Length: 291
Image 1 (cartoon, rainbow, N blue to C red):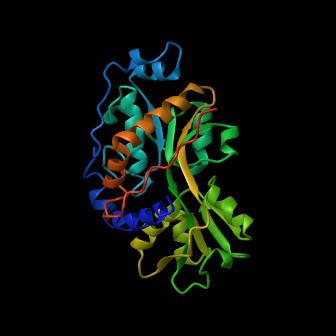
Image 2 (cartoon, rainbow, N blue to C red):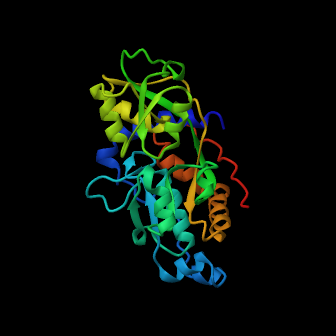
């Protein structure tokens, strides 16, 4: 699995270059069959049965991360690897992708959205952490990546050892900020990744940090001005969010994604999104057992 983050980095560069023109090109790369009798498969009183019977599901996703969760203006649905995982879960509940309510979710509102019932699930590059599991449910991981740094070309920052005392930005509410603070950086949070990237371009901050898959994409948009430096200095375990008030969702989510890993749909989703550059498809990660 150590090769996974590097495969993802290579793939993202190709993806973002064509994101504006092709983000909606293949809206259903995985042939996921919708279970028309889904409600009958679940026990009475469970969250799964309630969602299946309603025929409605609200899923929080990112709209600004090519390859993971991206939606261009005018596109009917977002696209990306996170989106494909969410569509697999929705289909298991008897809900087709065009019936899903896709809710744009930023890093700082993922827990509040789950706690308040704004969304039923979160699939938004959502790193699994002990702190988050104190307030919301998280199943997975279904994806692994690693944190890196984005800087202006010519910067004296060549890796994580050089960020002590430097201003480093990411999105508010992300685990990335905590990671760089622990390494001596002055962390600054912004609402979106694009705002953070703009600060690096303008010289307002010294570096941007988040998953390398996202950073290389932004560097590809500004190849003459920006570059990704250093080796990954963390392992981000990306999972699915749900409300702690509905603990039965953990096993449902785990079983559903495990089935996709076993039947090849997980690999198809990767190849149709993050793997479009021809990067080798990694082995799926081992998911955590539900408590």
